[in-house]
Image 1 (cartoon, protein in one colour):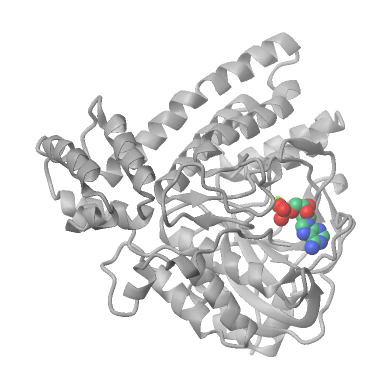
Image 2 (cartoon, rainbow, N blue to C red):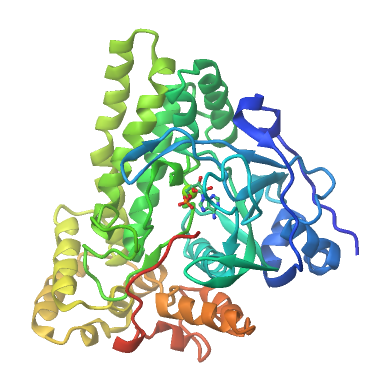
Length: 477
Ligand code: AMP
Ligand code: MG
């Protein structure tokens, strides 16, 4: 079986200070864990060729396929508010880009592929837990209709990675519109390298926003794309967990699934990340944190926006000033859909907020309450039904002014199946024991989240029992 990957690389043609060209570090005994056949086909890669020894060797970093131009990208970033002038791919290698059957250009990247000049104190590796987590959660996000990086494959390395204890190593093959981050701009801005900033800006515009006619238009496009993205997270009860500027993609895709999770019981202050002690990246703070990240992006672009610093600031500020309204509009659009409302009325956002307040008070299950609006089971998630029923009466009065099939709209906007944390953890535990079946079954159930769950999918709609609740998730390291 011959593996052919149709590479067409452009990032590798950017100036040398954008990356370090180097191959991934080979591993001892590569073995396939999970393969995304549908995505392989979308990319124009034969999935059976990926399953061959040659394919698995490529996915583990043991062989560099023809046409690849492997490199580690450099970037910087604010991590929990503190600036690191140099981060970069410390455990990832970009193999190259592919223009898929849909005409879209995408990066093919190995994550967990060994040390690079950007590894700092890290070992450049990942263990199979976070690899399987990112595979399942990023593919679920895609099925849920949220812009996201994708997962082509998860392989085991046959090596041991030392974390709290020894774990089996893994490599994820990540597919992304690009891996350009706000932090990529920050790397050059912090060095006063305006020439590189200009090259990066031109590249990002050509690749992601060809209609944008300059740095200010790029800023506006990224503000819009990110506002839309985070509103979609909010609508799913998704908590990214590490919204650092190096984890904010200029493409508007969700990137860097680390200690992320979907909420079961709703509360706006929910945090999962074991390292987020101050609740900086709590569920309800995500739109505000995004504004902070976008402000860092705007700051990077200032020297390109206008040669006159005061005018540059005024223009960037004007673009940023539109953010609160954009964010609010996107949030309202998402939650209006979740309530089955096709028309726009003045009190719609308040109606959604009042439901969320009742849910927070009851610690009601986020996904099941909204899904339950379609089939009349929402009230079952409230121990005290009175607050919900008071809200429901107002909602019904509002629905009376709607036309069309409200039930179908509700089911199309509110998923039944999400990657619940206890299920993801269960799949990882089984994989540690050599059983990939739970991960495969979960992946399959997550592929049609809006369908009425059949007998196979139904167990995944159940919230965790008290003993199953996962209270903290750990970084992808
Ligand atoms: P993340 O928290 O995954 O967004 O990573 C933040 C930075 O730490 C990036 O520059 C990563 O490449 C780097 N990093 C994370 N884990 C490791 C590791 N095990 N070895 C080397 N670098 C790492
Ligand atoms: Mg990152």
